[in-house]
Image: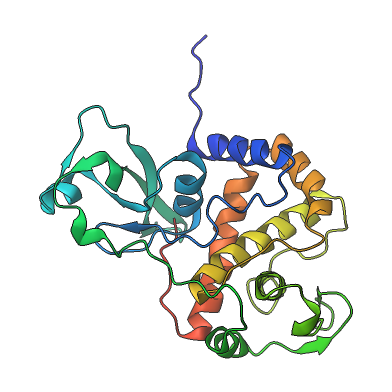
Length: 277
């Protein structure tokens, strides 16, 4: 019997599962606060972002195809192992998204004048204080936010409850939590209409929490602030582990929906929409 090779979604799911089961609740770390970019200056996002961060071991985050590197006068090193990425190719006749595949190499895998890319993957992250710029952009979302002792989004009222900024241990805790709740808000039936009716411990709940946490990672990078897992993050891990164990493509689905949520918010903020991949 011919053995099927593992696709990227399966490999990615297994990589995240391994990280979750390691006991490290900061499983976002591989891709948090990093901007993955092509040598042509286009940012990578969604599944490509998580794939590169989880399945590659390079310090630099500049990538390109063989032809792209050649165009810049660089040569891919002999024996270099490529990574398969996804490119969005519009929609088919039925309105369904179409995707293609291409292979890419990291900047550390090429010879030539790579100095021109020195600032491509540098991210200016605000680590200590509240960001006026991030606050102004978040305010554009128009969310109804009321004070509360714990952070949550209430779909029936379409409102967010948030403790005061001073109640958080750091700006990272605040922005990680705020963007997590803003992500839930995008799932309201009047917006992206995701299923928000799951109960704690079931698969629907686990999927929505995974989407919100991924969206928080993506948004904090775009806003130039550090993200941090929620204080109650650990309680979700078992649900997520079960979800990913049962369905190897669940993580890939969550990444796609998280990118949709991110793009929805970026559009309202007037920021550049990231590629869907």
